Image (cartoon, rainbow, N blue to C red; front, side, top):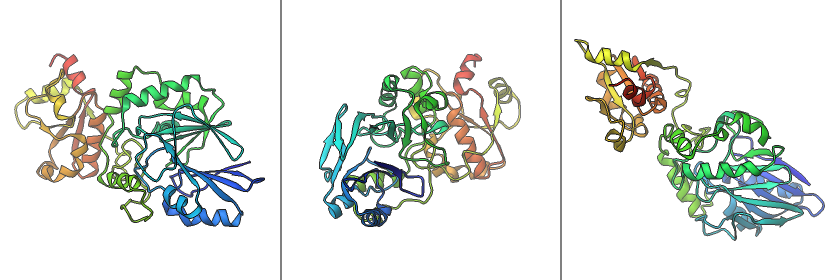
Length: 357
């Protein structure tokens, strides 16, 4: 039996081979490498029997449909998957006996509704349901994503043994596969939180999907076989949380302003700082309310609306959200775009209200 990862970049394709029977299985193949996969099969005299996609991908076009046409293999996805070219549909708890491998199927929705993870011996292929270490997991703000479902799926891992080795569908920063036991210590998605706390943790980080990712999903729904069916930027960690932001934004340092300091500055005479609230519209009239005089630009729209703020590039700006997480992202975007004097309301509106303002 042979197991290896085939691709030279962040999208991972896993190969299961049976050297005795000369058969092969691909998991999450990428259409850009379609010819490479055929060359492997030819050079090693292997018959491709099955392709498995762990979910409908939003950052690359799957080679599943093209490989099925070229090799007459079976194409496996979850029963909720939308692509119509799938030939075998699986559900939670299924055990597949394929080419001498026993593959256990877990339905692990959250990143997408059709996400599955696979247990093969000591290997745990998690798709985008779970990444490695500080990468957490795939984002839940794509069409079909649901943070609450992701929390439910993660909580199903309690019964799985520590020795399973996690192999995700993406790795953007050269992290190495490691045991589930290690991930329980190092992965922020696996830290203990209530469902409400987990949902808020992700909501505070969400930016909204890039428009090109929606086009990729449509191409995969249609079982596209043309690599140019959707435009895809090169080397973008798109399925990571905040992964579609401009390069360098995440590393930009920001300054903080306490609720007390902001209160003093708003009451003082002279020019007041510009307040930009990056929460969603419904939050402004929610329990925490909002500060009078804000400019409201949801975090997912900020990059596209920077031109509206050109006249304030030299002014004091304070970015505000619920707890501070989205405001940090907003301040990073503004600073990277050349705004000179940007701060974050430390602790967000939660801190503002706790301070009695």
